[in-house]
Image (tube, rainbow, N blue to C red; front, side, top):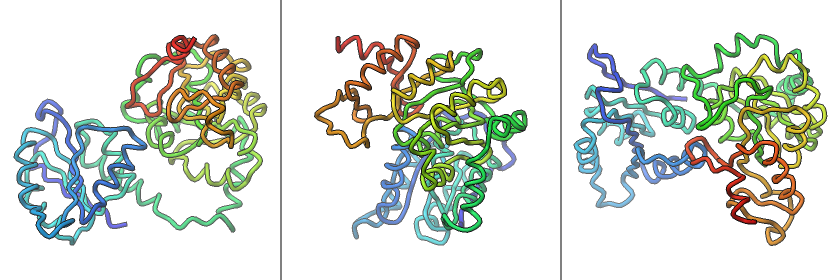
Length: 356
């Protein structure tokens, strides 16, 4: 992976107070820029601070003028520029702008690096960006579900409570963000489980790239009978787990047993279920949860949408799931609906009250 960063500091340390805000410019040949932005915002959430320039889409495209206007508009902002090819004409035309103290130019752009910068603080440093690039290099690999990789994943799938709690202190140092933000409105540090999220895709981009960082997660427990008994699903889910985070994929009852073990309380654990019913069972069996979130559910269960209550485009509930949600909210009135941390938190209780 040929991702490089050109960062001219001229001996000056960047501080948030020096510039008005962080801005991100994605400039590529063709429509890659707008495409990668769409995908990134689907996972991380929409950001007004991102601008895309799809260069050379038409013969009349005046790329130089677009760049000139952009940098004139944001001369007082901290700018991160992403381009596609090191030797490409788009990157070449931006090299001059990279000499400015407020501009960082990153080329060979890929999705993980872009999302890391999107989620970073305004005063993100060159060293931190290089870490993002190193992490992205590790993710670039040929996926092989057979041979040695398969045996390793299957071995990991058999980890027990002792393994998920092993080295909790070292995981906290490696995997927690430098500034570990609490959920937007509440984070009960006395709760046995850091967070419980209902998500029909279980571990995917929104969870791996945003929620694990927002919640400073050190371990993920997937509580789902189907996934736990399907080796292919287990391997695919484990591939999505960020580096430095332990993961277990267990049937719901076994997950409850693990979560009730005192060793589990030593780590910040995110529990994932596909259904509200499973989340309710865990809440009833385990007790207090710091952050209870309904993100996505009911889209892939094969039941016609006409038979469901559609709360949001990503939350569709059968009558049984509606009842489970009411019981869940009765236990935890602060349960919220929120796809990604950048989205507004909406209390499930408020939504259900409007329907009654």
